[in-house]
Image 1 (tube, one colour):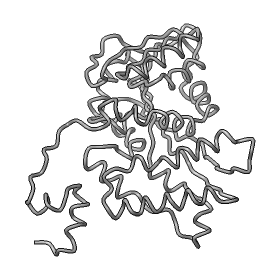
Image 2 (cartoon, helix red, strand yellow; image 1 turned 90 degrees about the horizontal axis):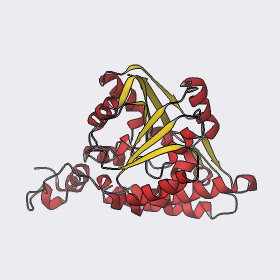
Image 3 (spheres, helix red, strand yellow; image 1 turned 180 degrees about the vertical axis):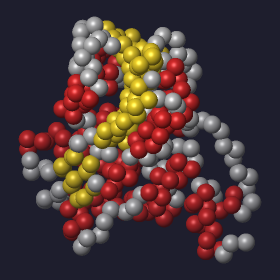
Image 4 (cartoon, helix red, strand yellow; image 1 turned 120 degrees about the horizontal axis):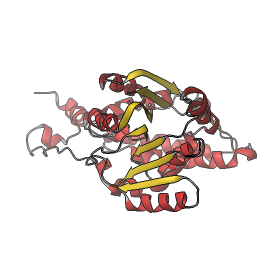
Length: 315
């Protein structure tokens, strides 16, 4: 029998109500379905995810990877799992040699419609498959299989990697791009800390660990991917991390677009913080309130790393 003062902490830790913890209400049976498996969640946050990708993307670094690291100087057939509106596919096709082709798998018809419109205005060979990636059965083999910001949200990443592996030609390359939020947190600083006499940003690790515990997003996936690829039997597993560092400085008018994107993403970041528990939720609300007030001040400034990993291996 725990001390009564520990009951809220225990309920918060296990993600249940105090009544469930004490046996006064039955615990809901967990299913294998998560909010990320349906299109509603992605449609609700559609605009946020678009600008999120743009903020963290580094054009020159990606070009360096394609040309100097992966050495893709020959026509390839490219397959993307969870392609969305084709953002990553377009980035690849702009750099790949003539004769390359792109295929994207996506369940959301709204995303696919936008992707088709974008690619229709280009000379790139492309195909879009409207299908749930969990139900996709590999048939045709591809030279390269890719995914961007997908593995963090996957129910069973090991099983998805097996599907990707089965979609590759012998000697093909898998390229998985994902983040580590701990890296982002460690690489964040704003002038708000100076204003508050060195008081640092709250440590959100406990909340992210709670998400992993309850089969939601895996906040460290970028760093885990090399292990998962090695475990799946891939060879020559390697990883790079983007050299993108976002400097938020509204006084720099040349970077107005990036400044606007940074602020938009950061002020909507709390929309991801679900199931944080009462005390943590209060911390989040208070922190984002103070951050917004700071961004509205005369001379705000912030620095943030992207924490974006590029993990790749050969079959």
